[in-house]
Length: 352
Image 1: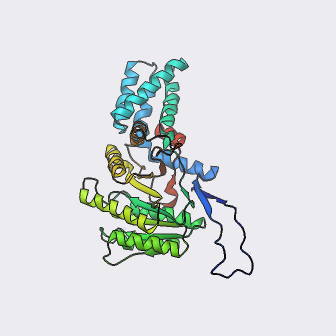
Image 2: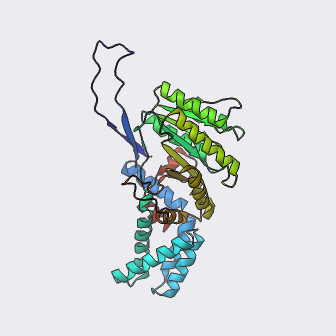
Image 3: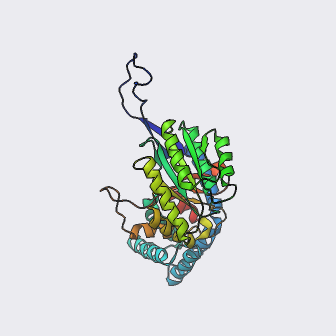
């Protein structure tokens, strides 16, 4: 699974005679969620390939012919559309692929497949960025998504690895909309040995405010708020998410530091519609794409990547927001089925 690398910041040690009330705080740390060791990553890649087999089989069949001709490109166009890459991303990839074939003077269809992997990798590369916690104390993460996308389960998996890497995590049960949501999150809190803040019949904004305040008082490294699942067409409920975000900012200036959207990879182009709608409402900072196992619609990540590119959000190097990264992808319900996103791995798995 993904792991943490901690970088301690320099600090002056408190004097021995200082009292508990006046002693300097312990040095802060920055933790970056990075890829697992090579052996574990190889096992993960096998699971990813298996999960994307339905998507990749249709694309791979295109390259079994003997000629690089219009028929090959037409078949590839159909395969990419069937994989839910979308019209724009499909046109972009085909144009890029034809350029690579021409420049490389490629004559074998089997070699075109490798060039397509390169084209997909380059398109997805801006989405590849690790999640970092510890730059703020606590780092406040707000998690959103529609019901059924795997939001609460993803929070549980993320919490497991944060807590297992020495981070003190506090969960906020702000999903007061769905029955048993609080209980589900409490189960994950119990499994991971972390604390949870909840209220009986409480307002989501009130719960998140109390959680962030408690996280600051208890010296937590990370506070994760589970919010109510909703469709982006439910405008009054989307407005409530805006309120939750504003209230978090009142509890801690500059928070939330991450606004993560969990999307179901099986939903194809609908996933892209969700990304657009939630980003417009909340200005997303990252994505978790779940349930890629057994899907025939894995190409939607190409559509998301092209949207991020065309949206013109900037590179992030000059103070502007960069493309919304895909922090994690999931191929099942098990703990090890959630991993950091790697563009090359995904492109390779996508093409079988």
